[in-house]
Image 1 (cartoon, rainbow, N blue to C red):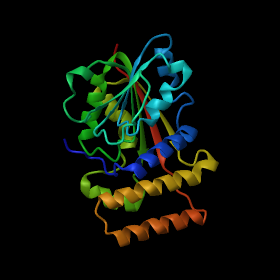
Image 2 (tube, one colour):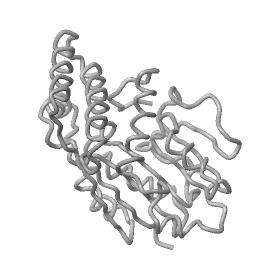
Image 3 (cartoon, rainbow, N blue to C red):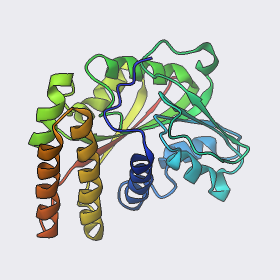
Length: 256
């Protein structure tokens, strides 16, 4: 099973993912982590909720810890188990899934809600459409998808590194159409800039630099050049500079 993820799977990256979730929650996410339509659809029932590309399970565990969501069962899925947490509640489980491979039978029509965040560094080309179709297949009739992505189409250095690998980094802007073509209905998109909450701008920039450093390492850029590029970015932030990334949250429903 090929791992298309372009960042390391080590302790520093796990810590970065956990920090990224906290920043995302404070600036981009819905207050209860799920769109109000999704909350309404699972209120009063015991729902089965999946988190695809779960990483450390930060989003899933955060949701499961909310008293109003304690009745639900949760499954975190990722192409690698390397970053799964060592301990977790009894209503949470984790499993290995490559979302652009044929979907295993046990995941067909199994979930009331499927959540996905930041596949932009792991998918290329037609894999976006394959993934959307698989996400649809995972849902029960009437179930909801919440897919959150970043539009990285403009940072020149990131594009220069990733375009040779087939990653154009602008798929977030195409996400509603990708989901529509897969068969999702009642699509809704929300776009939030990384500068939406002023006091979090710097943390967003620094967490992005950490991710960029990992991309450069995986891409094989020699260490001296990698250190220089990252140092220049850190200096720019120290001097009060900041950039903006748009985050796209797309919600869609599987036909009942």
